[in-house]
Amino acid sequence: MKVEFKLFSLLFAFSAIMGIIYGVFTKWEEPVGTVALFLTAGLCIMIGGFLWWTGRKIDLRPDDDPLGEISDIEGDYGFFSPHSWWPLFLGASGALMFLGLAVGWWLVMLAVPFVAVSAIGWVFEYFHGEHSI
Image (cartoon, rainbow, N blue to C red; front, side):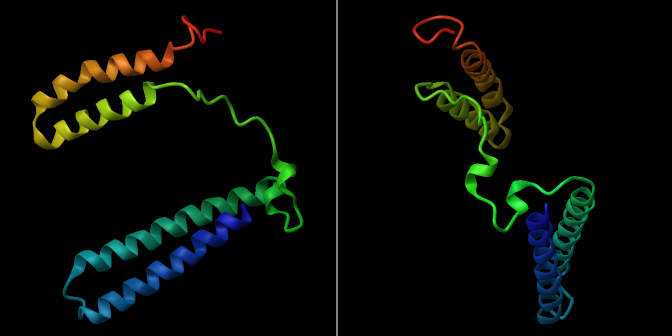
């Protein structure tokens, strides 16, 4: 957790400094960018604080060891289907549905059945056919 804590601490410092610089260059008259940068700094310090607090409670992980090897953290990463077309269909139908939020609700209603069929197909692809378990 030390690496993540340091990363978010650096992001906090960067966002806070950039917020001050942005405010000075705009003479504090343009509030949106300054507020966004300070909110980003606040979010980074909250996440960094959580990681620091959590890192104190747990043992060191293999990736916190500067002398650690990649083989120290090897393990099961899960099963990823190399032949499945369902993620492509689900992504395309999901993009169509979210496009409908911008264009019109009629497109959302048109995309919902495609999302449902794609999600069901992806979940149940190993229950029948050539690759059934």
